[in-house]
Amino acid sequence: MTTPKDELLFLALGGSNEIGMNVNLYGCQGKWVMVDLGLTFANSEYPGIDLVLPDLEFIEQRKKDLLGIVLTHGHEDHIGAVAYFAADLGVPLYATPFTATLIRGKLEEEGIADTVKLNVIPMEGSFDLGPFGFQFVTLAHSILEMSACVITTPYGKIFHTGDWKLDDQPVIGKPSTAEQLTAIGDEGVLALICDSTNAFNADNSGSEGSVKADLLKSVKAAKGRVLLTTFASNAARLQTMGEVARESGRTLCFAGRSLHRIIEAAQANGYLKDMPKTVDMDSVDGLARHDVMVVATGGQGEARAALARIAEGNHPVKLEAGDTVIFSSKQIPGNEIAIGVIMNKLAERNILTVTEKQAHVHVSGHPGQPELAKLYDWVRPQVLIPVHGERRHMAEQARFALAHRVPNALVQSNGDVVRLAPGKPQIVGKERTGRLILDGDTIIAADGATINERRRLSWYGLITVAVAIDGNDALLGDPLIRLHGVPIEEDIDDFIDEASDAVAKTIKENRGDYDKLRENVRLAVRRIATSWTGKKPIVDVMIVETA
Image (cartoon, rainbow, N blue to C red; front, side):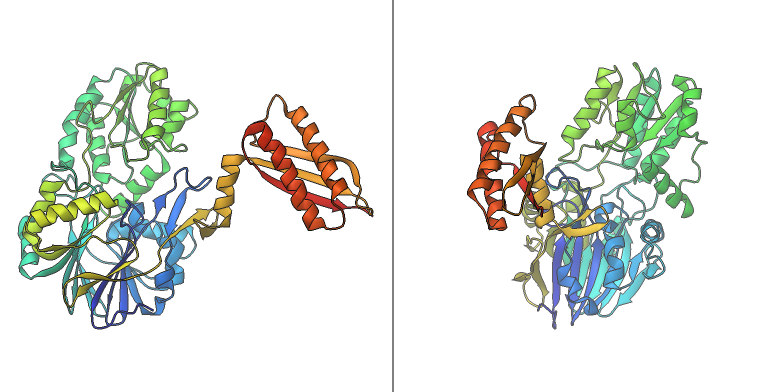
C-alpha cells in the first residue's frame, strides 16, 4: 500500500502521456489531495461509447485519506468525471464561482447536489486541506476563471499550472501579472507541474483579443447567412462574436445546448452582461440572410452537434449556396476526418468555409515555448514535472526546460509515484491506472469483456443459430440462422442452405453432450462463414430441447 510518509509525493492517475482525463494526486504525511477530475471523449476504439473515465481504484482504496478535490477550471477534461465519482469518494470539492456553477449543474443532473459538498472559493482565494495550503492564481486560458494552484507543503511549494497561456488582451478576466508570478517565485518553488500541450510551438499562442479584427472582416465579407463555430466553453470568444454581430449589423443566434449552458453560467457570475439581443433558432429563417449571424456548436465534427445537423440540412437553421461557415477553432488531433466530412458536405452545397488557415480567427489556449520560458523565469522551480500531453509533448517540455536553465526535469507517466521531497525528485513506485467507460448509465472497464466483445462484433459480425431437438437428440425442422454484419448479401440464401446442412450433419454426429454439441455447431458454422468471407464472425448457438 502506497501511503505518503514524511515526504511529498506526486501521482497522476490520468492526463500524463495523453491529452485529457486529468487527475493528479499529491500526498504528504499520510494524506492525499486531488487536483482535477476529468474525462476524455471516446474514439472508434470504443464502439458505442461517448465518454471515457479514469480508473480511480488507487484512491478509492484510500479514500479515508483523501482530503478534497480541487478543480482548476471548467473544461470537461478537468471536471467532467466529478459527477460520476464525487459521491463515492465522499470528499468536498473546491472551485472558483464560474467553475463551481458548471460543476453544480453536473451534480444536479446526477441527483447528488445535496450529498456532495461544493465549496466556492473566490478568485485568488486560499484554503487549507490538512498539511496542504492552496492559493488560487488566475491565469489566462480559453475558459473563464482558469486558476492555477500554489500548494504549500512542509517540503516546499508546488506550482500546479492547470491549462494556461499568457495573454495581454484576454477579453474577459484579469490574469496574474509578471510581477505577481515573480513574487511567487521569490518565495521559492520546489516543483512546477506544467501543461505540455503546445511544447513544440516555437511561437506564442496568441492573444484572445487579436481574433476580433479578422472575425469582423470575415463576417462583413460574407454575402449571405454566416455561421461561426467555436468551443462552447470559450466565453471570451462568445463575447467577441457578440461584438462582431453588433458591429456588422447582424442579428445573433446561438445554436447548441452547450452554448446556452455556458452563457447562462457566465451571466450568473457577472460575465457576458453586454451581449446583443438574440433570436432563437426557429426565428432565423424569418430574417433576411445577410442580416443573420449564427454561432453553433460542432466545430470538431461531433455527429450530434448543431453544425453537423445544419450541414446535413436537418436543423432549424438552414444554410444554402453562397452562405459562409467560419471555423473559429483548431482541429483537435484525431478529429480531422470528422471535421473534413462536415466541410465536404458544406462544399457540396457551395457553402464557403473559412478556417484559421485563411484568416486569423482562432488562438490556442495553451502556452508555446516563449510563454513557457517566461513562466520558468518568473517562478524559477527546482524541478519541472510535465503533464497534460502525449509522451512526445512532455519529453519536449522537459528538454526545453533543461535548456532554459531549470535545474531538473522529470518525465513521468500515469501511475508513476514521484517523490518530490526530501531529496532529489525521483520515481519511487508504480501504481495501477486505467480507463473506464460510460456505457449508457453503466460504468465498466474499458478493457473488459463487454467492450472487447463489442469490438469483435464490429470487426467480424455475428451469426445466431437456433435449433430444436427432440428427446432422442434428433433435429426438429430446419435450423434458424440469422446474420448480423457478416458480408454475405446477394448469396445469403445459398449460404444459409450450406450452413444449415452443416448444422444438421453436426447434430447427427454429436449426441448426448449439449455443451459439446453447441461448441461443434458453433465451429461448423464459423468454418462455413470463413470459407465464404475470409472472416471469423462470432457464432452464438441456442439449443432448445422439446419433449
